[in-house]
Length: 336
Image 1 (cartoon, rainbow, N blue to C red):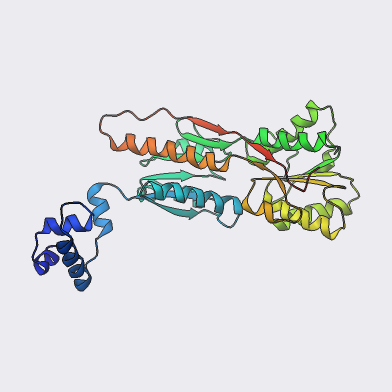
Image 2: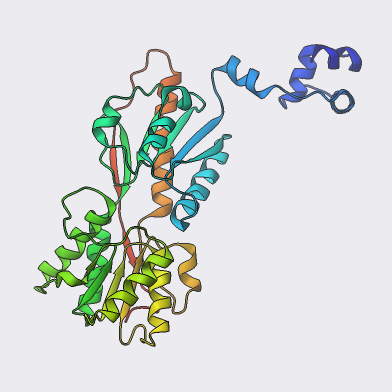
């Protein structure tokens, strides 16, 4: 910066004012400084700047995957909110591997960020209690976390109950769930959505045929397609399908089309996530909207509070908050 000042015939402070967009610099002087910066190839050392300020201007998003539409669209929403705050988002993919999750949550790694948004898939509450977080964090997703952390999650039970109730009230009596659990006592996504499915049946006095609870290893289109074809070939009758992700629901619709089963006249289908692709499927997919925009807003609000408190000397950290965002069923052509 001193070299630029000498070459342009101005003070180092004037160069600093130009670089940081501060007022009080004449147009002619500003242009001369910018031309000199270009001529000398001067670049601001962002790492040194952030080190001096004690900030990185980066928010970490640690998720199991980025190729699933839900996580990709969540990242997009969070990135827009982060950018509005003058920061940038860095995405880390753990692949749902416990060791990689622990590595991403290590003290050294988290120091790269001003704050982090974490969606754990394998690490449990007991593991998290043993970790030291020197960086403000907010957790998302269904995995239980210690009450000492902010946690924003969707209403998995309520959303699944709404979807199943609609199928039952519109005539379906044998509803398959793709992704369900026979033992739903674990607080993870499949178990929570299975509970909502069972609650709806109980409330409306309809028995559940356990053969319709179909467990899958993943929630991609291929899993949905295979699950429905295997169920159909087994001879177990069904007239409705509740699928735990829109991605898997794509495979379900493909399988039913291949089997020449009419949707929704013969079989109704509802997905979960209300992703952007639902309006472009044939037929258009009914889906549970888990409050995607509201969830991103709540996450960033809580993280902003945490970061502000961490940067203010003598201020106590805000009390941790668990937020459950309301779900809403969005009806389209795949249901009656």
